[in-house]
Picture 1 (cartoon, rainbow, N blue to C red):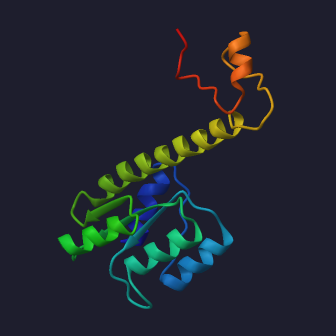
Picture 2 (picture 1 turned 120 degrees about the vertical axis):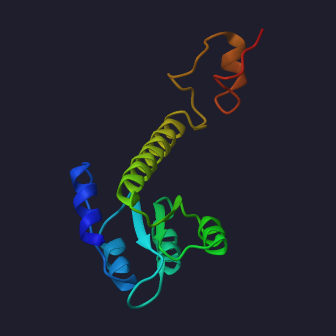
Length: 155
């Protein structure tokens, strides 16, 4: 399963790292940053997919995690989503296609979050007048950079 998914995700343009168990995930998280982690609920040794989810969210909180399983239940789905999983997929003949679509959406979400952080940094309240200010009237300058908002307009 891992080899097939690696091949399909690589073909879709993603860089893929494999980890066989929870300790492998811990080593990978210590060595690199990730956008998306896909994990199976059941593992042969050393924990399960929910353990992976917890470890990833502790080490790299913004990583999107997709949990896949052939042994799904509403309780496991609820638990995974409460722990911060981006997606929960039950194994089926269309699993690879579903995962590729989910990974694409998760990567787009991460990119939007990055852009939002950059935008917030460039428009943050720094105590100095910003050249990006949307107004130049005496009222606008008097309002100060911490109260300015490009979504609120004075009439």
